[in-house]
Image 1 (tube, one colour):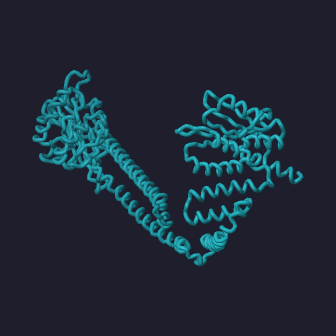
Image 2 (spheres, one colour):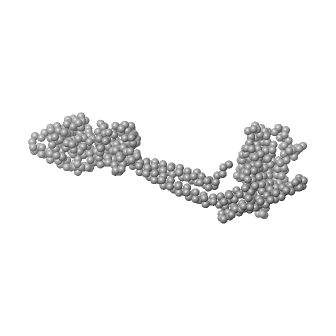
Image 3 (cartoon, one colour):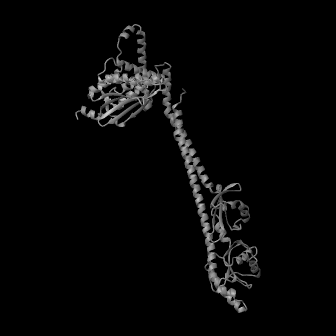
Length: 591
């Protein structure tokens, strides 16, 4: 197996656990911030368009109020209906109209406001200097003819030609027919006009860097905006978005993604249109996101270099220790690690030096024993192995296995050493269920290397039972019995270790799905547990556990065995009193 250094693992761990989460978090944050900024820009743009629409409606409403104010005046029909037969009559009505127009001028929101009142006798009253050409220009215009056709309904004209000065600034006009009191006879036409400058100012964006497109369009496609030739060129691409039914639509203009929003003006059939290029609007937010990413990348590079420096500091002493271990592995047992620090690595080095010294002594003893082996063969066969010496030997073998990096052997030796330690220390008859489960797990480690992974172990342990006291080596023989006598197919089997606390007792059960024995053999096992059986009984471990429990707690406790033929299960369980370690210690100390 290829060696992977601790420094490499630290750097890889930093990349996986720190760098990648931070990178993903940064990307997520930048995406979220960008989305929020874009949303705010879109919201502000929509609010501005709404404000533009309201301002334009306010202007138009002011004109509409002035029109209504003139229309309801009783003197207006009289002026239009009375023929001007004398110069005196003309001066009278001109003076009266001038007063009316002066009064109206005080109501106007924006100036100038041009008011004209035409009769059908060739006369026109106005608040501006008129000429015969201007009167003819009004009467010959299309909007004037449309006003006569509407017969009293107001007609709005967008960016119409200036009828006062040829080639002058365009006008916004509202015109309507004035009728008699019976609303039957047409008496004249009222015309209220305003220059387009206030509307153009409303349409202008406040941000010069934003290349937005704002204009007003009527039902016939007539446009009012800053650059009318450019707007007329773009309008065919914008028009489908206006009839789509949505107030905001994305479209392509000049090869750039564009957002088109529009509002209908309540008093007219006009629409206020605002279009902006996404790359212009979101350029600021993109710059912020790019700046954040740059700062984030620089910070990550700094932290990465910091991790490399820190990992070098931590791994330098470990590399020295590794070099010493390599020398000892090559057989140079005189080598020792030069301890220079007082941290965990220094303590590890001291322990390592002590271990090497003991290992060398042990190896020297082994050499001596090997030389005497032939002479002591007979005595060795006759001698009994001291369990304590066996345990020490296992510990020595364990360290040798660790040095040789044979992990499976090390794991088995550690498990066997633990089980041996439990068996030879007999001063304590009761241990906690947690300790007994640990013994079982050590035993299962050995069985795993004997039988492989064909048998699956499932633990269903009630946490309330872990501190309960049980006889030492009571659960382990039950599991050993499964491995010794259980018969499983090629697909293996399953063993369930279950602990349950019921009232004042604790039940420990080992359930397996191995092949069931015959009914006669099963009855024989149960009779031997009850003490009524005859003949030999091979399951000494089970009977030993059963008898120890009854001697310790009484005949009402012990081991029971049952079988479930429907589900092919064998259940061996132990019942002991529910005694906690804390209560047991208090009793032994006299409380």
